[in-house]
View 1 (cartoon, rainbow, N blue to C red):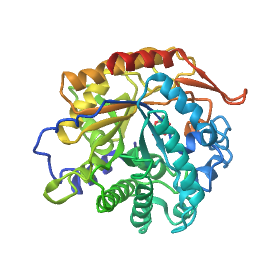
View 2: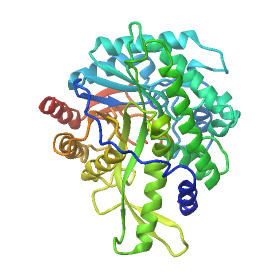
View 3: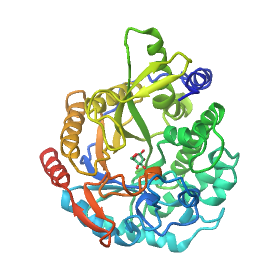
Length: 435
Ligand code: BGC
C-alpha cells in the first residue's frame, strides 16, 4: 500500500484514462445461467510439477501453518468425486485451472501426458453435466519462466500467449469443447503480492515501478493471447475473458478530501488499472474481452495517513478467518460500477469466505446471491453466472491448508475424506430456487 500515490499518478499518466466506453452493457447471451464452483490447479491437484510456487512452499517460514501443496486435496486423482459433489449441488458449471508447469515444463516442450490427463478431467466434468470454465494461468509459473524474470521478462508476453494458444487449440474443440477461457487470475493482487510487497513466491524485491510493469505485462500478455486465440480457425464460439479481483473501496470519512483522494487512487490502482488497458485495447477502443470474470470477496475502508500513505482496513461487518469483512451489498455495488464502465457480459468467477466452522458461509451465500440476482434482474447488469470459491477446502497460499473455504470439508487426517458442510445444502437450495 505504501507506494499507492505514486502508482496512481503513474497510472494516470499511462493508461488509466486512455479512453472511456461510450455504449451501455450489452445484453447477456441467451444461454442458461452458469451456477458453479471454482478452484485452481496448485491449490487442489497435489503432486505438483516444477514451479515457483512449489519452491516457495518448500522454503522454510513462507507458509504460516508449515503445510505445503504436495498432496493438497488430490484433485489430480479424485476429480470425479468432486465433480459428483458439484453435480449433487445441481451446478451446471465448474471453474478449474491448468498448471502451465505441467503442460510446458521447458519452453516449447509440450507434455503429452499432461494434456491427456487434463483431457480426462474435462471429459469427466462434461459427463457430469458441468460446463467447463478454464483458467489458463492461475498464479503459479513454471520454474523456467520464473527464473527468466517471471511476468517482468521481455519474453513473457510471447511465452504466455504461445502457451495459452496451445491449450485453447487443444481443448476448445473435439470432445472437450471448452468455450469459456480465463487468461489470467487476479492480475492486481498478483502484481501486489509478488512485485510491490517483495516477491512472496519469486523472492524479487518489490517497488512501485515493478508493480505497474507487472500489471502492464500481464495485460499485454492477455491482449496478445486474446488476438492469437481469435485468429484460430473456428474461434467464434470461444469466449475469452480474465478474472479481475474487485473490492468495494469506501472512504473512511467521505467529507475528508484526503480520504477521497486516497480512495480515488486505490480504486484506480486495484479495480481499473488492468481493466482499462485491456478494455480499450483493440482498434476503435473495442475491448480485448468477450466477458469479464469478477472475483469479489470484501469491502475495504480507505483512509489517508499523515505520512502520505494509504491505509485500508475492514469495515464494521463480521470478518472471516482471514479478517476480510463480509459485505454482501458490495457485490452489487462493484457490479454496477464495472458494468457502467466496461460493456461486456460478467461472470462471477469467485466469491467465498474463509470460515472453518461454517457459521458465516450459509448467510454469506444467501446474502451475496440475493444481491447478485438484484444486480441481474433489477439493475439489468449482464451477469452470466456465479462460481463459488470453493467446492472443497484447499491450499490457501501463504496461510496453508488450515484456512477453509470449502462448501465441503476436507478431512486431511482421514484420507482426504470429503464431508459436505451445512452451507453445501444451502447453496444447493439457492441454485434450485434461482435456476
Ligand atoms: C484467488 C484464490 C484464493 C482465493 C481466496 C483469490 O484471491 O484467486 O486463489 O484462494 O481468492 O483467498
